[in-house]
Every structure is written in structure tokens, then in C-alpha cells.
Length: 415
Picture 1: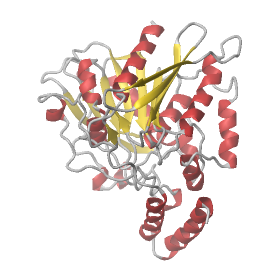
Picture 2: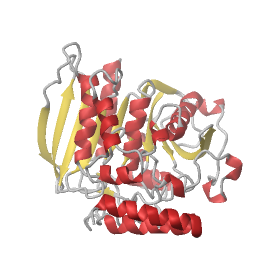
Picture 3: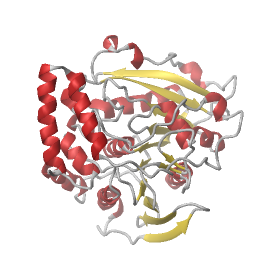
Picture 4: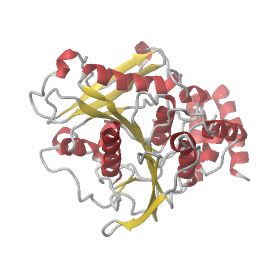
């Protein structure tokens, strides 16, 4: 039986179970099916310790490693909107597990220098679409001066602490001073804590989860001294797909986007089309919406992007990276002539690690607008990451460092 046909049958069974035995039984059927459908990643992914792991006394003290590694694949289980609570329910109805361990109210005092060095603070944001917690890293080098802000969107089954440890972004924030905020998807909004990139409402400006993520971003900007010209967003897998949505719908808020193993804008409308997109396909409505998003002139303020994808990724097909590039290029690169600039291609290999192909694009003024890294032999994991977090591959290239390098280049160009 073909995958789509099988999923439609599973969805029918799930809907029957939803009516007869409740959402728990229905969700279990979908999760079991997805687990069987998505092959496991190579056993070596993420086992090696990153050579650039943070030194003792820095991030390890502030951001302890999770007690376990998440094995297997970054599945998109629990995605069916019919089988989950609405993300927009009032905060009074949230479960205890949704609440942060501590959620201090931020005020203007946060603009003053740190008294005790680096901090990793818990916070919470609520608007008409719902409530999401987040963690904010403030480097020891913050003394009230304007700093860049990086928004990091985790993948399925992850959380801010896990994602911070795996990407080492907090340690990098000490090297290249910036604030880093990690919005947290709640399990009540998605059973596997995936960002709901495939829902129509969650692909629109000022609606659904994009409005919440933008709200968290603005809250940090309003509370701390942030350079508004240096606000960036990045994500992994489902977080990468949501980062694409944020760059597409809020080009006025984010100066550049980092995408790791993500999917293009409007790639899906529901669970079956999400599964098809992950495998490199796209449903009819998704193709129509993708064509509109990719049409020349459809995105007058396309945001510069840097993306990473493994050519052996069996969770999110690497063709999704090509589709993201195709969407970004027409509006950002055409200029007055409306022609796509020539690409600069570089081949390389990290020491004792993966080979890669790096393709760079510049506009007519020489500004970097898009950079694509295809990592050969690599699967579904954050490249150059630390084994202290889940879904990491220490064999590089270092996605966190390269994203920060690309982001800082954009800031210099804007000045």
C-alpha cells in the first residue's frame, strides 16, 4: 500500500478511535504508524563529542546537559489537529507540566548590566493565539549595550535546554556577544512538541504560532537593549520549517534566517501533505501555494537565508532545501534585471568529518542573500553540534558558527 493511502486509512481509524475511545487511543495509532514509516538515522549521528564544547564554568554551569539522549528519529507524531487541544486555550487551562519552573516578569531593569555574569532565564508570553514558555540566554558580556538577538526554534521532542546544549549557541553567545531566546513548543499544542508548520493558520502573519514567536521576539527587544537591525531566527527540522515561515511573514522583524533540515513555506496543509513534503513530495494545494510563494515579485522583502541539509537525511528529504532556495531567490536576487545571479560553488571537508558543497548567491550589489550547505553522507542532525543535546552530528561543518558568521555579515552590509 502506498504511504498516502496507508495514512488516509490510519486517519480514518484514528477518527473512529477519537469518537469511541478518546484522543489518547487515536494519537497512539498515528504515533505508531509514523514510527514504523520513518527509518532510523545512522547510528553514528551525534555520538562524537564536539571539539568546540563549552569550557567548564561557562555554559555547563548555566545550562546542564539533559539527563538522557533522545534516540531514533525526529518524528512528527501527534500532528493531527483533530487529535490535539487548541493551542489558543487560555493560560488558566494550561496543565502544570506546561508551566515554566520559574517565569520572572521582565521589566526595564533588565536593561542594566548583569550583576552575576551570564544568565539563562525562564519566561512566558501570552497573546490571542495562546501561551508559550521560553528560555533567554544573556551572556556575561552584556553590560546594557545594544546586542544582536538570535531566536532559536527547536525540533520535535526537544526543548530549549536540550536545543541550547546541542547547538552550543549559548557558548557562541559568549564568544560573539548576543542574546539568544529559545521559544518552547508545548506538548498541549503538539503531542511531540513540534512547531505546527503544516497548519494553515500557523503559516500566517499575526495568527497562530507565528504571532506568538514574533511576540516573544518583540518582548525581548522591548525589554533589553537589542539592535533592531540585528534580529535573526534559526531552527531545526520542524523548527527550521517554522523559521522559514517567520522569515516569510515577518521580513520587517528578522534580518536573516538560518534553516537546518527544514521545509519550504506552504509545503503542507495537513498531516498527509506534511508527510508527503517530508518525503520530498507535495500535495496539489501545497504545490499551488508554493508556486505563488515562489513567483517573481511575490515576496518584495525576501529575507537572506543560510540553510544546511544532509544528503542522506531520511526524515526530511534534502530536496526540501532546494525548494527553499527556489522560493528565496526570485524576490531577493532578481534586482532590476529580474535575473538570478550566478552561484559560487565551493567544495570542502571538515577535519575528520563530512564533505560538503557550499553554494553562495549575491545580489547585484554584492550582498550575500542566500547560502546553501549540502553535507554529504549526513543525516537528520544539527551539524557541528554537541552530544550533550539530541539530534546532533559533531562531524561538522559547524552550523552554529556558520550561521553566526552569515548573520554578522548581513549586519555589516546593512550599516
